[in-house]
Image 1 (tube, rainbow, N blue to C red):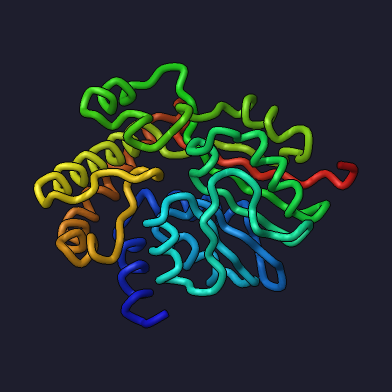
Image 2: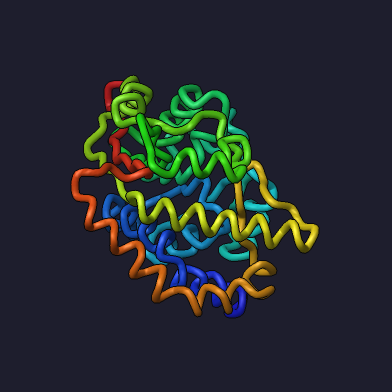
Length: 265
């Protein structure tokens, strides 16, 4: 991996309030990974994969869309596999820690995939799962669908999970030790605006507006004008997301769970 390749990804992270929120919550549940064998699944364009490796440990990566796999591989090298929610190419009890980022909602057999994760995680090992939270009601949900940012556009086979439904899926193999939501209404509005802006830009340029993993921002996107816009808008976006603090009783539209692999299964 060249300094240029790492540079654009880290620059994107430094200008993306939403990616910063996501990674901070993953890192808080992850802890120190030095000396651990780890796997990240579904880490989008590789920025999260790159940051996880800076946290220490021996990492492999995997994702669903070919575009995402290629982008991750260009950033981190090493072992990056394409998987589809079925059997994986990893060995029994291979990993101490697995981090799954925005992946379960994209595959048909989510429970079967969790069984596969239980196979490759050592007894007593850790699983972190980040998913969209299924809303009972949402101020932003009707807007997203009205402008075409539907579950189908995102590549979602289900609208998300609630804490109880995700815990029930994990229960046969994992014990949930912590769960929380993050990214409230103002963050969701920003996410909607950024995705819609990306779609408009891609349509004007005749490019692909979505993949099996929704939007995958690549180095070409960033160099092709994305960096200039994000740099200019970053202070305003950071201030806007800060307004989430005005909604203390609202749940976030993202759900993250930490779970431990049961030793008796």
